[in-house]
Length: 287
Image 1: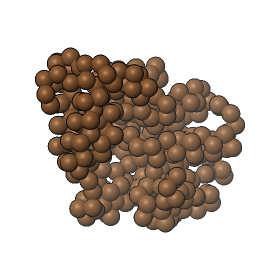
Image 2: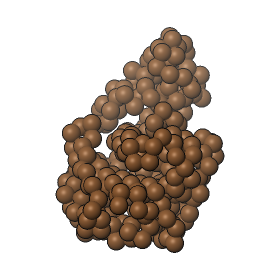
Image 3: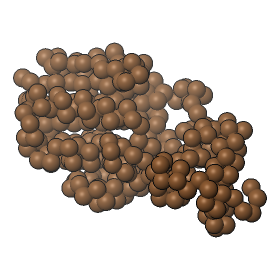
């Protein structure tokens, strides 16, 4: 870029540069909005302003980082989820919009099973940035919500998000359900690692090179954590309870069968996401 640029010229350069490098040109606008701490319409109003040199250099560095594969969310350190802003870094997965659908599906079923906003014990297994636990607490204020993760760095990110969003969450370090054993739960939700190692070759370099593999991959064709969850759940749940998990789109029948084996009398549903792909399994226990 030349030394003096308007916002419009900088945006035009960045969009072309990202397109040449095989990246989404919309990232150019998102990064510029972040830099100016504004929204789309606010940015449009600045189009003919000249960018200060320091801001121009900072923008160029951010655009080059994304061209080299670093996700926009790790560059800005934020991502929107369920209408709220969450901090994200390389210790956690970037929140996906599909996970919002897990929460919507869980809340709908909780209302049917328990009634509106009852006092419930909810656990989020493998919380990552804390999006599920925090959103559940804010959407169901009477719940007591606990969240586990095996990664201390991820838990630190989740704690920071909970503090920023004023959500009271009991965070626990440990493997899968171990930190919540010896207690009874009404609702257990999880978006565990579910990608089979052999699927890595199909994945984008942006994900593969930057997001934590600990939170992406699982053994047994991606089913390892569902198998372990299904084995541990009968000892953790109350007689009336709900389980909801996010899955890989090929895993619906396998995960549903694991939960049916643990809860033969339960209602087990495979639910599609907005893109018509199998994405969630819900298990409703009402003995």
